[in-house]
Amino acid sequence: MGTKGIIRRIDPVGRIVIPMEIRRALDIKRGDPMEIVVEGEKLTLRKFQDNCVFCGSTRGLVEFKNRYICSNCKKKIIQL
Image (cartoon, rainbow, N blue to C red):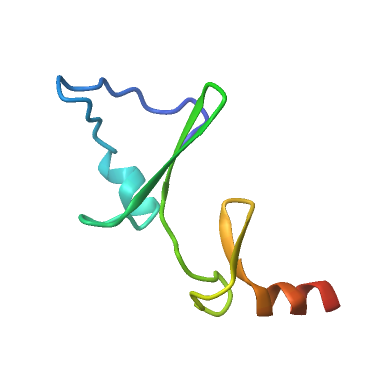
């Protein structure tokens, strides 16, 4: 995937199709939850992850650079 992006039109009911090559690259499968984030005039669509990227925990999560980190891993990173 280059920096130019891929253009898709919104259908009559407001849907867009995420191209297969993007879904494969991001490991997005049918039924995966997707998160839609609005920041000013920017719309971000990302695969929803509700667990720590390091240990897989689902408790005490904080978001950092579009990823989730649990409080235990956060403490360990701070100690480094």
